[in-house]
Length: 339
Ligand code: NAP
Image (tube, protein in one colour):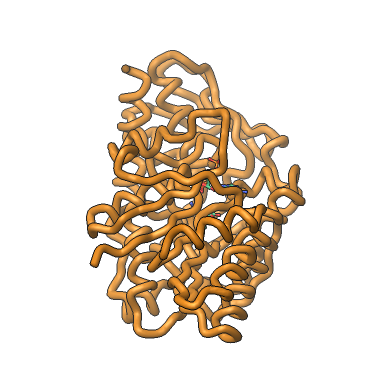
């Protein structure tokens, strides 16, 4: 029998890659999308799967629409990927962030709780929950010390998922995913901002790029590798939470340096603190500047995941190196400019 999966956040980066993955596994994929006047299906078109998914209009903050949806379809698996997912925006819009990112998953769990046949439930937890970390690496047992309204909302969603698993025997899991990127990453996220910005500079469409704290360290993987882990978590005998990461950490400055090297640019950092800037040695022009406006009210300076549990129990490991990932993103951004 063909399995039916619901993916919330189908218009986002992970929604697109997960849909592609599940379609290859012969699932019927229902994608939940909140109605929007903007065209937000470009990622599904990029992967050539737009016509293979049934789209339903659902806002996670509206429980009545979720009740009707679960009456209409019998889902085997539900992947909750919808969220207001940009940390910076969560400081500007903390209330709508918590409504979508914290209360949204609770709404789904409330609906599932009352079903006779309960689908399996995946919650997109985040390494941002670890926040201001005290240890060299973070795993499933590390403490949460969230530093933004986004991360605090994710901590709520994480605990409520565990609580419904324990209280109502729902097969519910949290995938604690460290940063994962791709050509489909939103343009506001730093990695994509860099690959898009540099490719625009290369083709002469932009003079310089402004960024925030270039010393923040992150554990970056490829989104296409990470969606497989989501699916694997729901195929286990028992519902458990897993960290998904690469186990390597780099700062944003070294991400930029790898990108400029791949592009064959000769560059040099000069100056200090807010005056630090990257110079293109070929024409002596500044191509990257620091701007205070991109610093967060509270910063997460360092994240590095330990995915040993996923490696052992899910037999999952990251396949794409950071250099390969940056190459892939630059190639796609350059192709878009040349269209
Ligand atoms: P994304 O590209 O920002 O996608 C988020 C999706 O959520 C979009 O489809 C968005 O729809 C939808 N959404 C937002 N508010 C909604 C609401 N009220 N009702 C229904 N849908 C709503 O995020 P992503 O990178 O794919 O990440 C997927 C999930 O994993 C998110 O929950 C994110 O927080 C989490 N996560 C991501 C990372 C990462 O590095 N990418 C790491 C850890 C955890 P619109 O198109 O209408 O805005």
